[in-house]
Image (tube, rainbow, N blue to C red; front, side):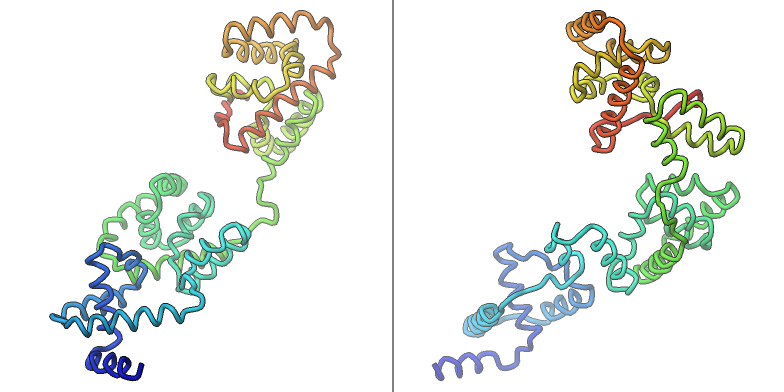
Length: 344
């Protein structure tokens, strides 16, 4: 054992730890097994390349000694950690809440350890527009250069015309920015975003009121909207846009998605909803039937005719149930509601 250890130490005289690392990487390159070198920071990659560039021949005995030492060190390792925040959060997976994960990434980016641009690109359009309207045009130009095209377009459109022109001119000077400068700009913007006041209730008031009125009776909904029109026209318009009722189905639902909605609604409830007598509700019923197979639509019509006279409350409850199903499918991402028209 002592003879072996002595030989190993003798063969490694003159090799630094970096050179030993270069030997291991060189051997792995022969087998195409090197993965994750891009996870090293730029300085570490540079040092590794420099060490490899300065080495020529390594004898077989030295090579074997380096491999043996490397394997011994691997065997002595009890547990390993990713060494960076993205890898750590990926390892934790669903065991950490989305809120906690978001906070950790944010703190990591602000501290300078992580990349701030990933956090900035994930900001909602409203926050990006606020930043674009208060930060210097040079910073905004760099931000637009880093954002995905959709987010950059929404942010650009959200700026006043004069400011948008100035930002467009400033973008001509973004090509020469260095990676370090870009990271510093990202940290500044991320800190500015965190300093923006956050509403205690994230959902806009008009959207919340519209969601409530979705399930109100038609007479109560009309009465509330009339009062809102008298006191705050802008708020009333926002509430109207947030409302989605049975009568809006023809203008807010794609024809191809009607069968998907019908599959999720109990047939007896659907038939009662189709029996609504209001002209707008009848138009919605005709739209639903027109976008089903001929056999299914004929069957539903026959069952609707066989119902006889229904209580208005039964029809209203059925329409509410259909709307609730559509909302649930939308929240689950299974269908997409079209934007409301100006007439709604």
